[in-house]
Length: 279
Image (cartoon, rainbow, N blue to C red):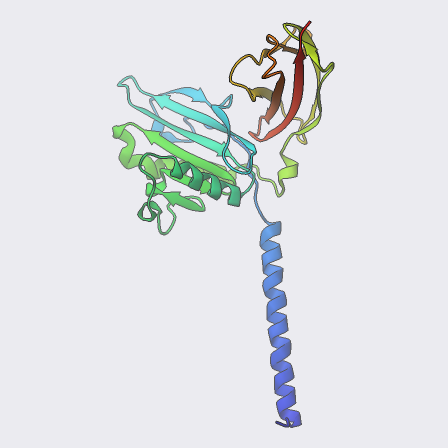
């Protein structure tokens, strides 16, 4: 088929329009990626959640409630905020700090898989009550990289949406970042100063950690053995020591993992292998 000049012009315009639309779509995708929000842990008090007026706050999220692996073999920390009343009513919520929105979605889905009564699609709020995704009128929701789960006694069951909105409101007003590298601590060095180590002995370790915001860091430790692995202690000068257990010819190699958690709730980890020998 032979095209005249007018038809060729129309086809060219249509072709250029399609190219422009594709470029615009890709630009929007890149802009969305660039705008990904990373939110750190923030503190909550009764002032932030007036629903709890008259109650006593017993947990202020000052230390991690738990540090576990859920997805991607990376550790994430969870913090709890709790209130109780003289009538033994209670309400608390926990916040788990993930590295991205996608990680938060995958982690909460994985957590649901372990429930004795797994969540079903009907439990997802459409539209979301709060956050980016919510379940059961906001009893669980995701805001960017944060997973929030609310637990209450019966007295507060009907107030869960109100509580969730108070939490989400403060999260939206809080500090945010554009990249995980802006908030995650970095383990620059982690080693035991002598390896192999003699059974029933203490060996100092070298630990060097940097935080991009100069936040305080707490340590947690994990061993890859169920027993006989020894322990970790710190002396008055702040030096950490590995204390070895008895030599075991079957389990003479120990994996020791250091987990560093900063005030923002983000984790970094590093593992060393220690060989134990007889004296």
